[in-house]
Length: 273
Image 1 (spheres, rainbow, N blue to C red):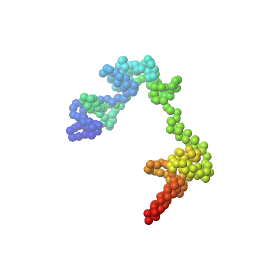
Image 2 (image 1 turned 90 degrees about the horizontal axis):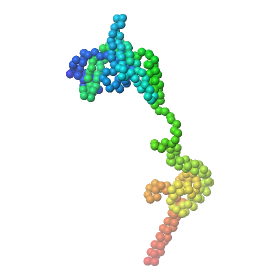
Image 3 (image 1 turned 135 degrees about the vertical axis):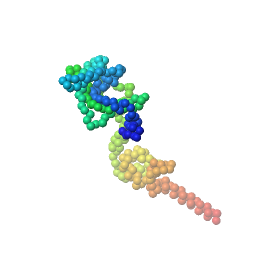
């Protein structure tokens, strides 16, 4: 809250004019039970009850009497059952003291308006009657109920999303893990023989095909292939393995072919001479 030179105040970025009769209007700030304020908000009538101020043995007594139309309340969680709401409320009044309190109202047409200065504070408490104790018990039981409860279903629910016991990705991963777990490492030389035999048929293999050929665990197979092979990371044969030149019969065949071509060119030159 801030104040400017035009005798206005600003509350939440809204200006309120302090000039006018409402500056000198005194109001009471009264605390009421939650159920009572809810009854007031549900009422379609402007009048929700009456205040009675009287004197008794030289002391001022203040009571509030709730309108008869608001004296019943639907029981929480109970269909058709109603509870009796206390109608008589004595007010316990206290002084404001050194505090400076004001009351505002807000509407869509008039915006924020100053209603007056708080001159008295009070607390509205009902008498501890049987009706009030029954009402309080019902409201307390409702407030401590969990907002979410577990219900046992008698039949399958087909109108909403049903949870999956296990997703297909997890099933495939578990199947692959168990399959590899059953593979036993063979002797290194035996695996090398199987690999060389496979590469005599084809020049390029991906790791999955090599696993199928050798029936060896992936990590063990990759360890051997790093020693005798080359992994292609780009080009037409990306993500495949091939043997190093010193192990590959393809490289040897290429060298022999090149030598034959070189020899043919040499003989041709001699004949020309």
